Image (cartoon, rainbow, N blue to C red; front, top):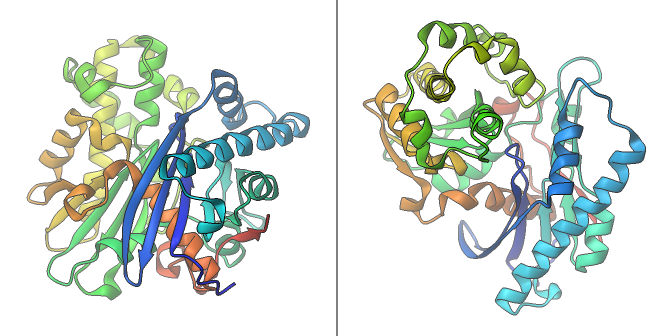
Length: 371
């Protein structure tokens, strides 16, 4: 597996926002990387509907539905990869491997038989793309007693660590997570902070007929309902100490509606959901007790100006920037992370950080499928 034919890897990510497939072509040179090209494919209405259905915890997932959907999802990934290759005029044999996270349907790492299941058919993707595939990144960490998440902190350390200042990498996808990068390398921590965009997106689609709140303009029109905010903050996840991870199993539209939110103004709910994300992020950062430096934001939430303003206000005196100031576009950090994790697997190097996930030791992450 120590193939050195190329330093090119493709990272593929489909997150909890359920919008589509991100693919990033990454060139690695020693301790540096370069974002060469990107491709994005929105989910078809049919596939998105299936994924949302499978993510619901109040209805059973039938194998006869899930398994074909895995092939369908993998075909969509293959098409996105092909688009990336066509745009760059590259042949499959110039790519060392694809690192594909898959689409998370369940993440339940706790208990005697913890698990995390991502929808992806690695064999089908390898055959259809004619490129080796690395997937199933979380199982090894969970087998070692870890939470299997977050996995990005090791990549964040590789890409964004500075010996001159403390940094926080804040990824705002459907779920928000942070990586605390102390200037001293042994101070790295990382964990999920709670909902990112997913509750806001649910409310926007339900009450405004839009997939997301562009720039946070809808939320800006509302007023935070402080009593409701305090009620939302009583969810036990927020008081659980790290290491910890979460997902749609804990935070979803059903949970939100159970809080009685339909009794309030729809704009006020949006403002309150923004405040929930901002508050839980700021609280998590303050937990670190790091001397304030720079928060580097990535993920779709980096485009929500109102959310960013609220985080900046609550996390002061930390400075807020996006990862673009360090050369990696905020929209492609997660995809780049799985390209890096694929490289780690290909070179038989660990991809987890036990002090982040709680695993008993370092682990080589991912299963390899050859074309």
